[in-house]
Image 1: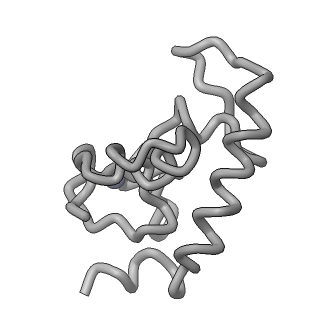
Image 2: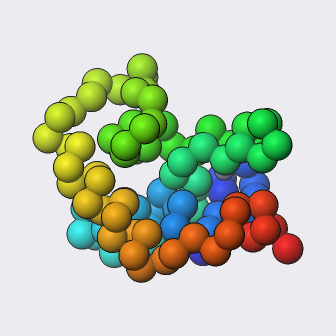
Length: 100
Ligand SMILES: [Zn+2]
């Protein structure tokens, strides 16, 4: 687990794109990659990290990523993987509190 490669702040496991990817692809190798936020991180109405829109677009309530085509067949596996990630690593309060 490392800081996010985009915004350089700590990545809670529940919002870690590499752990998400490890579950989604059933490929544990991803868990050893450099961490990145999955969902955007917004603190006090300021977005401090865009997260990983290409992955997050498949999750409920997230905007489509215009850079990548949306593949319907990826939606359910992505949502299942996200649910599994949340079950494995419950969010502990809001993200800002993880920075201490
Ligand atoms: Zn980040």
